[in-house]
Amino acid sequence: MIKKAEKISEKKAIAIELLMQSSSPREVAEGAGVSRVTIYRWLKEPDFQAELSKRKNDLLEGASRKLAGNLDGAIDTLIELLSSKQPNVKRLTAGMIIDYSIKLNEMQDLEERMKKLENSIVKK
Image (tube, rainbow, N blue to C red; front, side):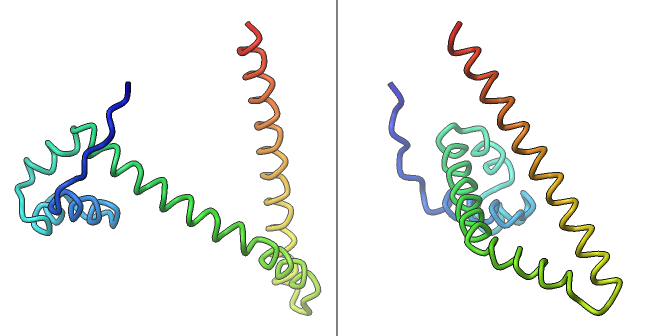
């Protein structure tokens, strides 16, 4: 049974916040009021790792939702730029659209291949 993560201390919460900002171990230690050794010890603790990982995942999920919510507008802007009277803008925009289309197709292909692989593993 997975034990529920205990509430982390205020100093650990500060350390996690600073780690989320990509601060150095020295800066994290100073900001949390602990030694660097303590920061390195905390980084090995499962509860601390879990909370840091949860915070990172929450941040990424929020950013992903924000990007997805603005995707249609960004695509519309690229399409509008194809009508630009400036040849460089048109060329760069066309190149971006082509690159993104290729990447999207590659991602869709990879996703399909992964689903097939997962299905073949599950059936065994």
